[in-house]
Image 1 (cartoon, rainbow, N blue to C red):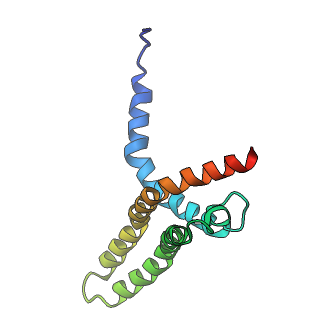
Image 2 (image 1 turned 135 degrees about the vertical axis):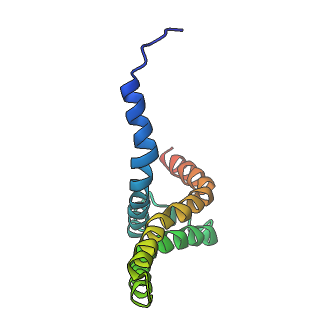
Image 3 (image 1 turned 45 degrees about the horizontal axis):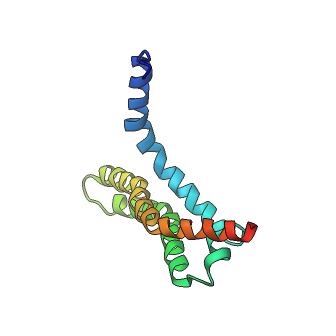
Length: 133
């Protein structure tokens, strides 16, 4: 085994990226993936076009999670304005609190969707590979 020099600067930057930057950018990435999944349902390599005849309920369940993720930001923004305006004292604090909760909510729904989607992806890749052969 060859021992390499440890670059502590890179280690610190990677730690900061994983702890600070990634959690802040991950909800937007999940949101964009859900938008892309819903807009590409008719594509040849999509789950819906390949597996909807075999697993219609499962495809519908995954699509529901994508739809919920896409609706989280508009509904959260509306809820933030309503909560901020209807508050008597700390309206701005409630507004910011609802916005922060709304921003990070796709992480939870994305995690649930990914756990549910693991076996579906395996089936999709197997079906695509069997069509190529």
